[in-house]
Amino acid sequence: MNTDAMEKMNIFASDPKEGTRLILVRHGRTSANKDAKIGSVKDYPLDEIGIDQAQRVAKRLKDFNITALYSSPILRTKQTAQAIADAVKLNIEFRTELQEFYFGSIADHTMEEIKNEDEIIYNELIAWMNMGQEQTMTRPIIPGAETMQDFETRIRRFTKEILENHAGQTVCAVTHMGLIKGFLGIYFGRGLGQRMNFNALNTSITVIDFYKQVPVLSGFNDISHLSTALPYGRVNLL
Image (cartoon, rainbow, N blue to C red; front, side, top):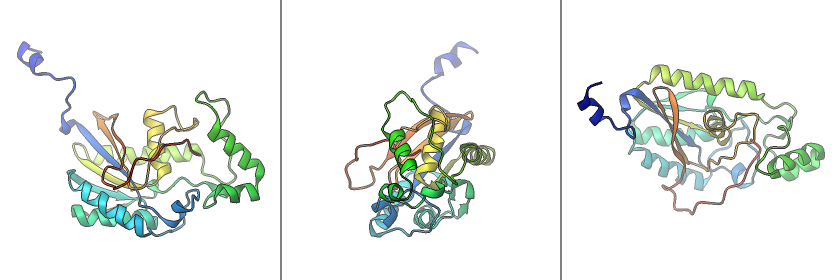
């Protein structure tokens, strides 16, 4: 490398042609979110607040040069993705890889309902969420839940697809809290076997730049498009 080239090199700057930007957007609010139910594949529609959130995030995403729009096929994500599609003038491509993590027997339940149905599982989940930063227990086994291996496989399969098909482009994927935390756990955490101390609020924007296919977290849980204060975070089931 000659001297002129070395002088021009900026290690803090990246060349967009050598990366793929993945924008992960969580769906807008539903009645299940309002009632603090654990995620499920059930088709809950957006509520009035969720519709407004979807419109706001869609307007915000017009500032990004999005070239492809993907979505989970579940109703709440489809509705959120449609608002974005209308704003950025793109068709939606639906992928089952982006569906919510399947929580088995506790899906679509509140914690109170879990306690009434299976107090052993309830106590294990509470202990998992409330343990200190140093992990001292293994992830509770939830009857009928998706395996972490299958969960990781579909996240990596979707990642591989966008890296192969969208080099130098910006991709938006409308998905669920569990999926966003899964991406972060795989690429920036300690793996899916560990508790994932990340948050993903309704219609939050999280940006992963795969620069030369190496993941860089460039944006996280951004809700600046909403007229709400940032709530305090807490650890959850994933």
